[in-house]
Length: 111
Length: 144
Image (tube, rainbow over all chains, first blue to last red; front, side, top):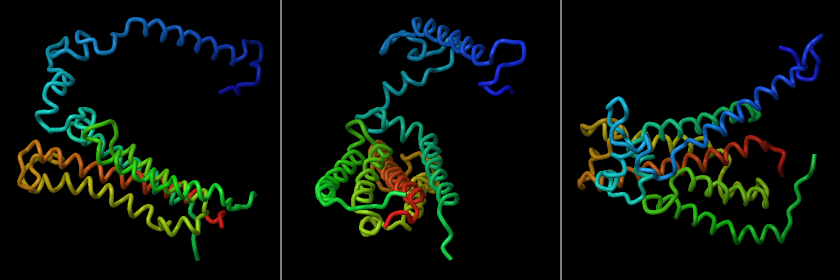
């Protein structure tokens, strides 16, 4: 790889190329964001009962059944800790691992 | 390196503020069923209350509140609570983390409610302890 500040012999500096691609990507994202569904739109693809290929959708099920299944008024908590329990378990393990690695790397040995 | 100096005004103010931050942290953890909040947010607030005392009073006085050596064991305890709830449901005939099978003799909905609460407590303990532990590791004997 060429370092960012050095000019390539006989060519466009690499900074300019990176900026060019970043601008293209930025324009692409802005263009796509105009076509996103509105918040709370019940006809958006992610909120439908069935996806385009016919598999059942998750979010409609959560909205209908979260309170009945868990007696928890806060649907976010019900999804986070109950329906998606594995995910939260993994997150907590990640935090524990980060703490343990800080412990191993930074703490001085006490002789 | 800058030396640590205790400032009496900041110390007094944070001494008054820290218990209320801690109380609010417990509110956020235990009220996560009804309002925005939960284990991660409450644990972060709890660690903020502890770290406030460490920043203002120094590590010597801060260790009276929360021992430095307790960081990683309490973090592991939090993860163990989470795993334990999952395995309890597994042992009593359900799937891993299916709180409806917990052996407490309630209706399945109430059992799920209880399971979510236990799990959130575990997450809160782990997050608070680990954040304090990371702060202590970064500081490491520079603070008198």
